[in-house]
Every structure is written in structure tokens, then in C-alpha cells.
Amino acid sequence: MADSGFRVLGLSTSPRKGGNTDLMLDSALEGAREAGANVEKIHTPGLDINPCRACNACFKTGQCVQQDDMQKLYPKLLSYDGIILAAPIFSRGLAAQAKIMIDRLNCVWARKSILHEQAVSEDIREKRRGLWLSAAGSPRPDIFEPAVPTIRYFFAMLEIKDWDSITFSNVDEKGAIKGVDGALERCRGAGADLLAGS
Ligand SMILES: Cc1cc2nc3c(=O)[nH]c(=O)nc-3n(C[C@H](O)[C@H](O)[C@H](O)COP(=O)(O)O)c2cc1C
Image (cartoon, rainbow, N blue to C red):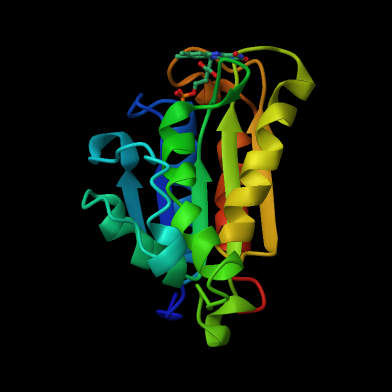
């Protein structure tokens, strides 16, 4: 497939490399690549990302004062066409490794809501797409619900109105997702769908 110029960022946030959400992400990125996207995968637990300090310095500048690896992620999060967040359920909510990064988008919130500046350039805003991939050990189908408002907030901060999710409950052991009929194929299709209409 020819290069479409569509860039997809895949964020693997589980500490378990080769785990369920990591495998889901690999399939989604494969689908996106096959559809013509340039893809980049980042394993965020391998980065130096500190929690938000609530210093509120960003309320004046729109920038985070912490000089850690979030500074490399901000431009990608705000400019790539597709953002895939692979984040499992830990302790009945979104894994802390994903949440720590989302909290650091407070400077993006400040840029938009306090400083009334654009965080994402106008020309790419409409074509941006998101995807949340998750897995949980519990068989309860409602296990993902507590995480949904945070995911909604994450995509709203990134000006992504059009986002989808693929979640699998009852998937616990490392790699168990491979035994779930059609699961990785669905992720692959969702990755390709990020480019639909682009
Ligand atoms: C610290 C921790 C807390 C967890 N808490 C929950 C939980 O509250 N509910 C649940 O259904 N599964 C829970 N799990 C299980 C994971 O959601 C499950 O193993 C999932 O497949 C992990 O995805 P991963 O392989 O991408 O890390 C927890 C796992 C860990 C390591």
C-alpha cells in the first residue's frame, strides 16, 4: 500500500511487554500500516514520565515545566493523525501508567481552556482518529466502565472527536488474547479503519 502520509502513534502503556494490550496494539498498528499509514510505537513505561505536580505553571504558559520524556510525547500527541492508546484495567480503573500520562495533559487543557489557544492545528483536527484498546482479567463486561470518562477526556484533550474502543474482559494471563477468537483480527481491522475517509 502506498504511503498515505497518515501518521499513527501507538502508545503501549502496560508494563507487561508482549502482554495482552501490547499484542492488541501490534495488530492494530499492523492494520494501519497495511492501510498505508506510517506507524510509530512507544512503550511508555520505558520512558521517564513523572506525575503532574499540580504546580499550575502551565496556566500561564500552556507548557509543562517538567523536562522529562513527556516533552517528546507532546508534539506527537498533538500532531499525529491517529492515536492508539493500549491501556489495561488495573484496580478497577485505567492502569496508572496510562493515567500518569493523561494527567500530564493538564497543560493542554490550560492552553485551551485558560489561554484560549489552539492545541491542535486546524488543518489536521478533522481527520484525527483515536482508538482505545484494553483488556481485563475479570469476566464482568462492565469492568471497563470506570475507565471510560478518562479515555473520553484523553481524546477530548487531543481534539479527537472520532474514536473507537476494543475491550476484552476475561483475559488475564500474558498472551491470553491470542486464544480469543478473532480478537487480534478485530484490532487489525480497527487499525486500518483509522484511515477510513482520510
Ligand atoms: C496491578 C494489577 C491490577 C489489576 N486489577 C484488575 C482489576 O481490577 N480488574 C480486572 O478485571 N483485572 C485486573 N487486572 C488484570 C489485568 O487487567 C489483565 O491481566 C490484563 O490482561 C492485563 O493486560 P496486559 O497484559 O496488557 O498488561 C490487574 C492486573 C494487575 C497487574
